Length: 209
Length: 137
Image 1: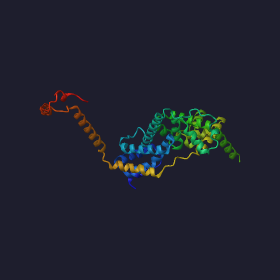
Image 2: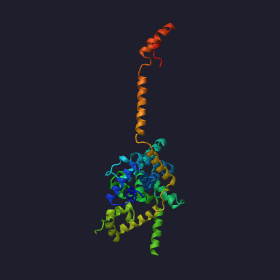
Image 3: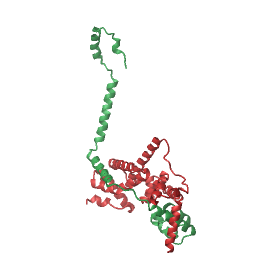
Image 4: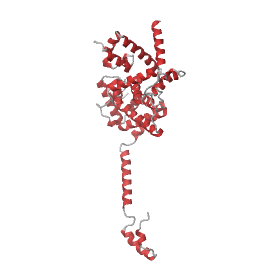
């Protein structure tokens, strides 16, 4: 393995200095035309980009298009990324989010109306979908969350970014991120009230055994 | 280690759920101290959060196609194989083309020399000379 990859391959959680050194190495190597670095970065970052696009757009084909478009921009503009402002990975995910917003905006323009969002989920939403399996039910309720709440939940819960990095990606303060997360979870709890109650009962029964 | 205050603990449960590992790194230790001696409100919040965390665990991460990974890497190779100056050259070519077109359109369709040559020809054909200078567009 080439020396550069020893520096840039690794986990999401590192000491801050390591992380920035790693980011800088990635960006420089990609801009220089290092195929191994580009491959390693793709393997590390594509799942996040694709996951975020999928959650925001709810459509596999659109999510794949956005993922490809994101990386075309990264390959062309890696040399423009400057350390210190945001992490390289945050910068990349931010590009993907902006592309998702562009698509959602165009869809709204074509449809001539807002894509429906569930700002105030009714407590009975879970009951309506009682026939559906749990996963589909939860996914449907997540898909109905307002965009920014859905994005906060995706970054923190599903992609397991730290609160600081998720806030950086969303370009909001950590307090604003926490507020979005809390609202998202409150909406989910309300919409899935019956399922949550059922699971709590199961949990309590298991504890009592 | 001092325990996290109750309100902040409830805020963290509400935002990040019941799993301490998902909480902000700097507040985990103090949070654990608080959770070891929970109030009834914290107990209730933790139970609800645990139920929701469990439901969220049923949601799978979207499947990433290996084909997409290969396509993204191939895009890099494609970009790399294009010289850096290629987009600039394309832009410059376009600019030159547009400029030449504009200059061509702005100039008189018939130069003075051409008019000088053509007037006697049209005169010989008995065509009124004013026709030559009328704009038919």
